[in-house]
Image 1 (cartoon, helix red, strand yellow):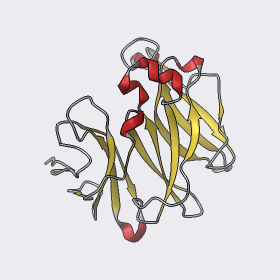
Image 2: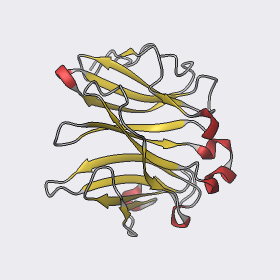
Image 3: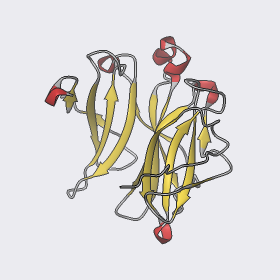
Length: 199
């Protein structure tokens, strides 16, 4: 099977050295939006979130000329994930990456998950940015990789990872709410832990 680069060129949010944490969602008029994180400065530095669009889920995607959002002062933003609710409202979740400034910043609240409502194009922010999950002691130094789904019963589940990705404590957890905007209640049980299923 022939493979292609889904994002052959990147937007102004990054210099193309490091592009990661992608997610694709179908939005209005059948268009697909690709969300991605990247640094405008270089590898492993503070990141912005960019968007790109395509009529096909496999791309190629055309990047927007401006970043979707940046927060360089608090460490940048990573791990964007789109979500379309049953009422047709569109949202993007992502993480403030305070730990990119050093682990000390994780203790100052610069390590949280946020929810941003967007227009039906999936890329134009509307309304207020809402914090939906914060790190606590059980998460170690960080939380990351937020992703929301809605069950048939109307429960919103916010999946996320905790601890640093390289030690054996890295895991996947979840929190639940009856409203997409929260409040989300963390479940103390782990969904997946390092070593489960040989992962």
